Length: 130
Image (cartoon, rainbow, N blue to C red):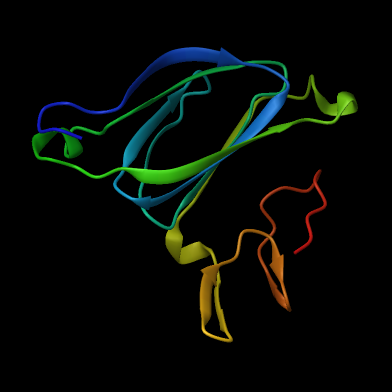
């Protein structure tokens, strides 16, 4: 991103889904209608559950706008099960230090759910397996 320019995903609504955001490089600021205001950086996870409805924005934080900045990450969108589409909206931030890592057979990673005895549960209504 060019100096003085950043990511500007303005406030917009979501319903009936969850998003998981993970950055490999850079940072961005999440703000939402629940009052959360969080900067996510590399290795951390933001988990937002829209449920019955949430409005949020994702923008470059002020520090990232001061120089040329890199932003690289993933955001997964998951539809909530029909029985949970209208649950209360929620947001959780998991800092890099709270997520366990693993190293096996030359592969290193950060665990977001389960992996061969290393466990970090991010949310309880999905059953994930590797």
